[in-house]
Length: 492
Ligand code: ATP
Ligand code: MG
Image (cartoon, rainbow, N blue to C red; front, side):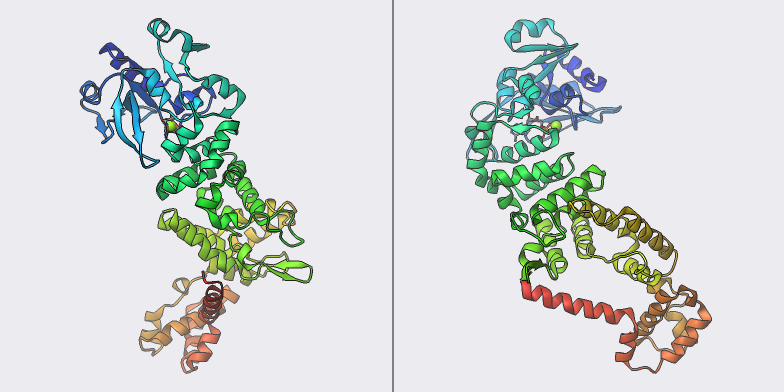
């Protein structure tokens, strides 16, 4: 691996104009680990105006003096930042002011962890003179490493630059960055850094919900989210940012489970990551049993978790909203949590049952619900869901997906009933359509115009209660009422 040419071009242009410029930070770390860097950063002795003058046509600048240079090629943009030292932090998050410096070493010293505090040079002649003792050559790469980053990369440890306690005190986001990096890279956290992290975990309250969310997403999307959440728990960060998940720590389950609620949640997430599932499915795997601790009751010598899916849905919604996830994600994940208990058993689930399930869950969510089930079964440690049973259900559902499962897919609509069936526009019309849909869900062959018109005329004079009972709507209403009662009982 090497520095991509877009980044090289920028560095060379700055050098030709007489400025120092290096690739720095996370991209150097990732390059040395032979991982694909998420983004490329260049640090330079040039001031923001000087950078802008060199790239007059393609940049935008932010209020902190970072200039983003746009490129054409694989790399779309590179952040070019003037060497700086962060002067004083009074709110545990933002430096009170940014001071430029002419020293690369000072710029590296303000960075959080040793593995993030290295720079990469394109040439060795000049840097040899200036950085002599701090230079490490790895194949063709010239690395400037004043704080022992390479040694820590080899030892796979996250270590603060300088005194950990001070560094966390300056900026509490680093608490979470430490855990996130450990999870992403499969590293451990060095002893003193870890001790400071544990001691200062409560400071995470100073960090905005959006930044916490971004770091959590990175943990969830990493290869090792289980270890990430174990770190969060052990350091005392979890109880501050996701107390609902902490409630599951040490909570034993019933005889079908080997793990506590917390262990099961993060193992389910781990499998979801292993199978490459989406952010939504991973979040659902993490949160699907979030309602269990509050609904756990003793029955005989076992536990029950009655209604944990309903309670958990509301809790998942609250958690995700609090962490400022988008409405789409909140909706999707809580919907998956709501339906994660769906029942299936070869030989017991009929085709009509599969159609009803598909109707409740929605065609667009079904694949994700199956994925959630796979991750969740694997994460229980006693997998009883053999894949063939899930495949059987998928087969049924695929078949069902070809058939009508919503009123809109019926062979007749409200207009037909008004024009040809002598109905008036009224809520009753919806009741009749729902009753017709219930029949079609049982037997898709009945989805024919003539048959439905005839059935509609038979249903025309049924009283409202009876119609309701005939339609899916009635069941759904009952379900809603039940949910309301449960939510009131658990005050969620
Ligand atoms: P990612 O792989 O997610 O990009 P990263 O470590 O590169 O991880 P960035 O947010 O891209 O993270 O930041 C780039 C570099 O800036 C870091 O490697 C680090 O040197 C420095 N940095 C970022 N955030 C902080 C912080 N809160 N405190 C100190 N240094 C930071
Ligand atoms: Mg980065």
